[in-house]
Length: 109
Image (cartoon, rainbow, N blue to C red):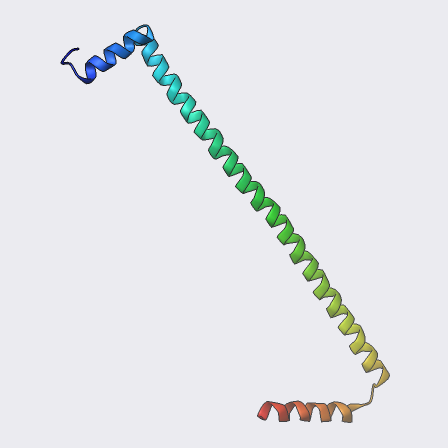
């Protein structure tokens, strides 16, 4: 046993690896492999998150589009009903005046 401490540990490890160049190559390869494994794990996680966001976004867009279409259809139906009512009673101003008075009366309460 030597009193060189960490230096002795490095030289012993280099000797076991077959020389300094092999020891450095082994350290590099181990670091590369560790980084590669971590990169793959993080890449899979990131791809999964992005994929989930894309799927949820597509579903959300579909929901919004269907609701907008439903609102538009309801608005068109309401317009058609109002047109029919107006066409059936073109000169019925007294009824609309009484409705307006009721609305104004409700606002004052």
